[in-house]
Length: 137
Image (cartoon, rainbow, N blue to C red; front, top):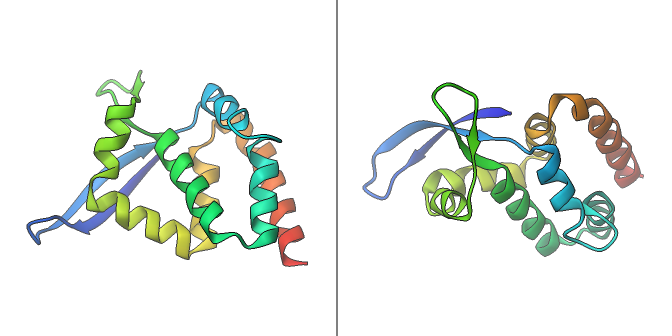
């Protein structure tokens, strides 16, 4: 799980700094993997190699949408729903995060690694690094 502090201008022109939470459970990862033919990882590798900006944007939106939620005060639950994700997407904070991740590859990779369950992070990090190395060749 990652707590992302985002500073943004609200629709009244005020500067707001707020914490937002993101996490992909193992179930979320399975759902993302099975949402596209060939799996999410293979799809992201193809997109990266093809430099398909439209596809990259769609996949990042899907990942952020799947990862966003609200943590309970006691830290025992992480609530996610279509309504919660849509409410976040309607904020300037979402716009700020989305732009940051699409314009800074290192921040995007760090974000993805940090939203993964800790026991899967090492395995996924290895795969991401392999994918980056392939994309650079």
